Image 1 (tube, rainbow, N blue to C red):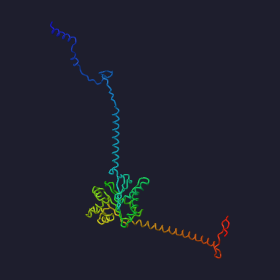
Image 2 (image 1 turned 60 degrees about the vertical axis):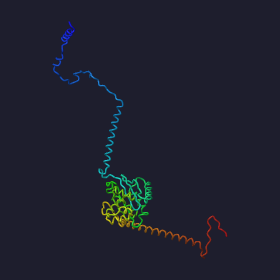
Image 3 (image 1 turned 45 degrees about the vertical axis):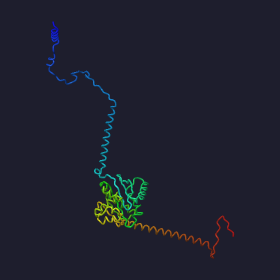
Image 4 (image 1 turned 30 degrees about the vertical axis):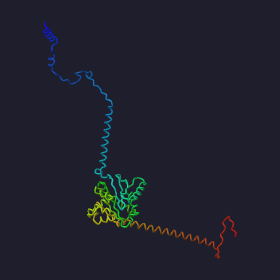
Length: 344
């Protein structure tokens, strides 16, 4: 028997011993498995899940917490800034400046908290005044208000510059942002007028609202004047069609006279002019009362002095009579107790 025949016979016998059951398996109906237990029973899963331990895994968690905190803090901060915006909060305070121009030019800078940040000299004439004002403000307790600073400024100006005849003062409420000075001009005018009466300052005064534009800055820097004076000169030049440079060289009394003559003060929203006569009305009444009190005090003081003088004269007369005898001869002085009379 050849080898190939032997192989064929063996395959036949093996096929008979182990019949192909694949066809029988495929012929059976298929039922889907719905539970793992149907496949594996109640034993553990076929493949056990392997746990992977990562070094420094806690760093990722901490970083995530920190990032969350930063996001929350940023949100809160942005919300607070939104609440501080004047558009969202009508009562919010914004920084602005008040310029006082006489001949000395002085700036009182008001911070967002409503208190004075600094008093600054805007020209050479103002340096000595500002130095004295800041020195006194530093000594007082608590933060300085506009009234505190303005009172000290007017006291110094009234010693020399506002004592002159036909003196005048320009008070400008200024800021880059127009919203910062809405309604401030009226407030500053009321406070300044009150201080003027208390300090008996007699001068013409103009109050103006000044938005610090690029043009105002340029005129101020080029002509070495305050923002307030620069803004007024620009307004007069527009009305009068004259040179801003020449107007900046004028003194405040002359400048205000020119402004009034050319109708610059017609707009009450921007300018308010207070005449010297109007400012003196309240002062005259106060002065009359003070003079009456002074006169009364003087009369009482005179009566007291007169009575004291008369009393003194009477005492002197009595002492003189005692020392003179009946014949008009002067008697020797009586000896003092415990002392022997002096022999001639």
